[in-house]
Amino acid sequence: MVTEEQIRYELSPRAVDKGRSWLTVTLENVGTNALRGLHVRVNTLDVYSVEVLTEDTFVPVLDTDAKEVIPVQVSTNVSGSVYVTVDGKREGEPFHWESPDITLTVGDESAELVSLLALTQPEPTVGDRIRCEATLRGRVRSEGLKLEFWAQTPGGEFEELAILETKTLSPGEEARYVAEIEAGEVGRYTIYAYLLDGTTRMGREVETIRVGEG
Image 1 (cartoon, one colour):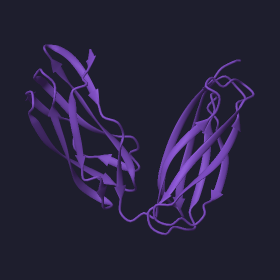
Image 2 (cartoon, rainbow, N blue to C red):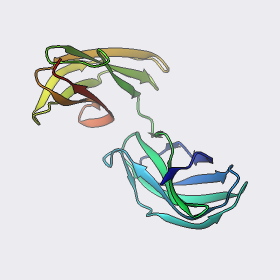
Image 3 (cartoon, rainbow, N blue to C red):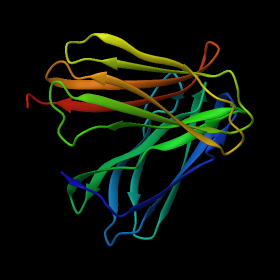
Image 4 (cartoon, rainbow, N blue to C red):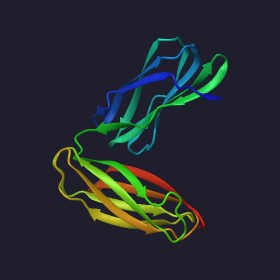
C-alpha cells in the first residue's frame, strides 16, 4: 500500500453551532492518475466533542483535476478536531491518504485550548522531570475557567498533576500554563489537559512521551 500525496482537500464550515450540522468535504485529484474505488470518511479525535453521523462515502472514480463534493453530518458538543481519510486504488495499487487534524469551533465558547506540549529531553529516561505546557487563547472575554493536567503512567495509573484557575483572557490573548511529572518507570506516559467552564468541558489535548531506562 502506498500513501497518496496528490489530493487537495477542504472542509467547511469550520465554525458551527452546538448540535447537528452539515459539513462539506471537497476533494480534488491534483495528481496525474485517476483514483478509483474511494472510501472517504471523516473521523473524530474525540467523540465527546464531535460525533460523525455519516458513514463512509463511496466515490467510484476521481479523475485528474476532478473534484468531488461530499456532505457529512456531525453532532457537536464542544470544539474538537476531525480528519479526513481516503482509501482506494491508483493504477491498480491500493493507497491510503489522510488529512492533518482540522479543528471545528463550536458556538460562542469564551476560550480554546490551543495546544499541549511536553518540554523534555529528546529521549527522556527514568528520573527525568517531564514539563507539560498548555496554551489557551481567548475568543471572547473569559474568566473563571479551570485547566486540569492528568497523566496516565506506563503501569496504567491515572494521576492528577495540577488543577489551575486560569486568568482572564481578552479576545485573541494567549496564556501558557505548566505542570510537571517525574518519570518513575520505563514506558509510555500519556499527558492530558482539560479546559473546563464549570462542569462543561471546552477543550481536551493529549501528548505522549516514551521514557527509556537511561
